[in-house]
Image (cartoon, rainbow, N blue to C red; front, top):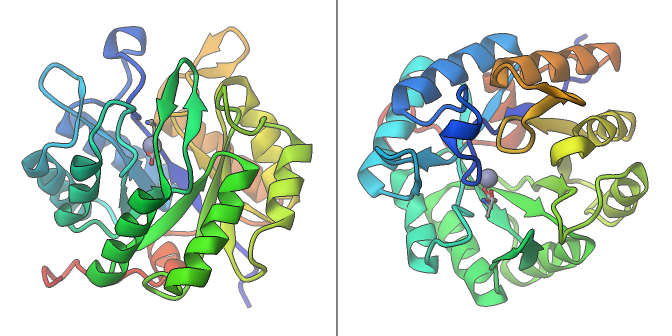
Amino acid sequence: MPGPTTLVTVAPTGAETAKEDAPSLPVTLDELVAAAVACEAAGAAMVHVHIRDDQAQPTLDQGRLKDTVAALRESTRLVVQLSTGGSVHDAFEDRLAVLDAEPDSCSLTCGTVNFGSDVFLNPWPFMVELYRRTQEMRIVPEFELFDLGHVTAMKRLLDKYGPPFGDHVHCDLVMGVPGGMPGTAQALVAAVADLPAEASWSATGIGRTTMPVALAALAAGGHLRVGMEDTLTFYPGEPVRDNAQLVERAAALARLAGRPPMTGDDARALLNIHDRRGGSA
Ligand code: KMH
Ligand code: ZN
């Protein structure tokens, strides 16, 4: 009988890093698809997607989002998760409209957080509207938790509006953002202790917290998110080669922990993703 496995999510691009500062950052559709294919081969099961425009700036352009979802479905079996966080400058309406591109999953951040010198806004009414749309549109949300209070807000959302589409709660602890919870084993343990017992969760540590968070997550029974959205340094002083390098390392850690990486289809089953691959919504 197969043992437990690890969901490795790759977040290849993000909205914050400039292409000039990280030449292997995937910013065109071709680069994103190539990165996704390489990351799937390295052990990723889900891709968390931010897209860029022709000037490599973050965008939530509807046509591009739809083309991106279609191209990733065509070339991989990864669960396709679109970011509804976008960049700190995106309007709420544009972030809600991301769902119209009909991804398998979307991120849903459970509260406002200081984000370096900026503010990442996720007020309660926005969270509610986004959550209700995911339920109506049969899109599985991944609850992004940047702080301990976000766990409380997620549970309030579940209490008031019922389970997510698919009936399975999946969270991602985003740790080490300047303004959010620190990327430490202690903070991870505190956050996990407060999650609903039946929830699955992954964790990612921003910047230099990547390794401590990954190791703590595996030790605590969690899944992993890695990628150039979250870190550009492989070892101190050594820039990341590309996203696949980060996935390879996460997959190796998961194997060492005795919980090898799961496939995209395994992740689809875990999260009860609605099948859109046949073209029907
Ligand atoms: N880019 C950050 C402001 C998400 O994708 O949902 C928000 C973020 C979270 O990356
Ligand atoms: Zn993101």
